[in-house]
Each structure stands twice: as structure tokens, then as C-alpha cells.
Image (cartoon, rainbow, N blue to C red; front, top):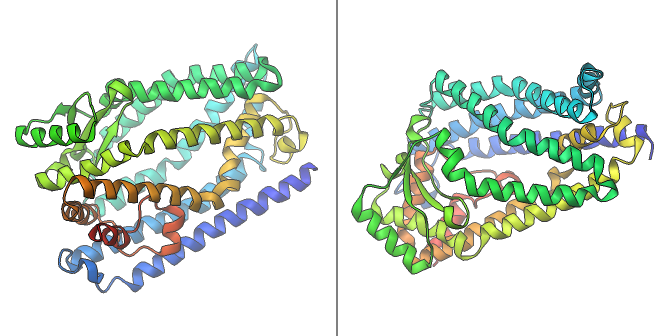
Length: 414
């Protein structure tokens, strides 16, 4: 293959993925607009028309913003690749460092920071306009900037040593470097799973032990029935940043924690909270987390092997606007363009995730009353302004959870 051929393939793939994304978004907008005037029959007793229309308008605003983001991301990628942006950044550091390793790290970090900086206006717009317009944003600009600074600091402390290690292995371990990098990648991710609950998450939010003794007793009884052990039950100050509510497990092994957003606890009753937790325990019972970790690691191995093949070819670099090949630029190019070629696989990953959600719902219906989970889900859809009428095809590409009507119909059939 020549560099020109690969350039044409890349342009075609980028155009196709961007056009499909925009087409799906337009379908989604049209479907929501067509169903905005009436609450779906299955929800008419629980959802007010005003809430249904708020969800439609909120989803519409987010989708239109996402469409602008699709166009911007495509242009940004073209700027970094074919227009020579990555090569220009690499040229700035040539001669500034004695080692190619330091030069590569500097180039990677600079490109990532530039990309993040250029995308910041979109994040600000979503947070301080769209989220604020619909009553969800509670974060101040000061807290937003503090979160950004903390994120950069954590990224530097954890990411820079990893990046140095990966590039060193790529340069020193010969043709099978990808196996060594894969081992480091697995170790790093497992380490993050262990340290996140106790060292990283508290940098951004406050976690206090659950105080409600009656709720605590019911939850502990549910955990015992399900054979689940946790290092604690915690309430997170989610309302400090957003009105959205959620609950989740975090950690791995003995560091597992159950975390409730304070916004969720203020809205659901004890039976509904127990049902939501039973759903999360369903993921544990069916080993969904382990299965997803194994799948992620398997895919990362395949991607690293593919990168090992591509970085030995000149057309990979030259076809993407890089004239001075290096391991660092190969790594950067690969992970920047891979989403372009893998986007059409999104429905497969989404379908796999939705299968897990159905299984967790079924488990929750065995451990608690299915109707309690139905009521909890309806309240969460309402409070989060989640649309009840997504476009089916759009949902197949993007939604990791089943559409509301289908999910609740499955629960009611339990």
C-alpha cells in the first residue's frame, strides 16, 4: 500500500463515520420531535407532559451540540494529521532534548493538551449553558477550574510514568514489545481499580458513610443474601456539581465500595433504593465487570499487535501527515485515528452492554419487587430528563442501556 492510498482510505473512513454520526443525530432529533406532543402510553400515569417535553428539549439541545462536536472533531483530526499539526509539534521539540524518549513524551503531552484546550469551549457550553438552562448545573466556574487542575495533576502523576514506560518498552523490547506493553497496561488498569475509591475519587468529591440506619440494615441484608462484601456504604456530594442522580460500585477486591449520589437518596424511597442496588448487584452476580475487563484487555492486545504491524510501514506515517516516523508518533497516530475505523462496530459493543443490563434487571426482580425497580427507573428518567422516545437506530449505536419502554416492559413481565 502507498501513502496516497492510505490517505484516501483515511479520508473516506473519516467522512463515512462523520456522516453516519450526523445522519443518526438527525434521525434522533426527528424522532424526538415527532413524539414530543404526547407521553408514551406506558408512562402516562407517572410522567407529566411537561416533564416529557423537558426531556425532549434537553436531549435535543445535547444532540445539536454533539453534532457541532462531530464536525469540530473531524476538522481537528484533519488538522493534526493531514494538515501536519502533529509533525509541527514534533518539530518544535527536535533538538530540545537529548533523548528521543523525552522528545516523544513532550510531543504526546503537548498534542493531548492542545486537543483538550481546543475542546474546552464545547465543555463549557454544555456545562454552563445547556445543563444550567435545564436546571441541572450546580458547579461554579471556580470549582470547574479546580476540577480541571486536579484532573491534569492526577493525569501527570499517573500518566507520565506510564507513558515513559510504554515508550521505553516500544523502543527497547524488539518486535514483541506489544506483549510487554500489554502487561504494563493490564497492571496499570488493575492498580487504578484498587486505588481509585480511596485515593483518586476523594480528590473531587466528599464521601461520607451512609447515616440512615434503617436503610443501612436493609442494604446489608440484601448484600448478605447476594453474597457480596463491600468495604463500606457511602453517600457522595453529587449535588455540589449537578442535579443528576446515580448509584454505583467502585473499586476491586477488598476496596469495593457502594456509592449513592445524595441527589438519588433524596428522591427514591428505601424500597426503590434497594431495587437499584439489587440491579448493580446483578452485574456482580453475573460477573459483568470481570467480563468487560477481560474483553477490554483482549481488545487492547489486538490493538497493540496491530500497532506493532503498522509502525513498521512508511505508508502509515506518511499517509497521516507525519514525515519523521518514531514510536511516539506511531502511538499517537494510532489512537487518534482508530475511532474513525472502529465506529461502525459501536452497535456490537452497545448490544453487549444492553444484554448485561437486561440480566441485571432480571436479577434485581428476583431479589426485590420488580415494580420497585420500575418506579425507581421512572423517577430517574424523570429527574435526569432522559428521553423516553429515542430513535431506535440511534439507540443501537450509542445507548449502553436499553430504551426506557423496552426495559420497563421486560421488568413488568418478570
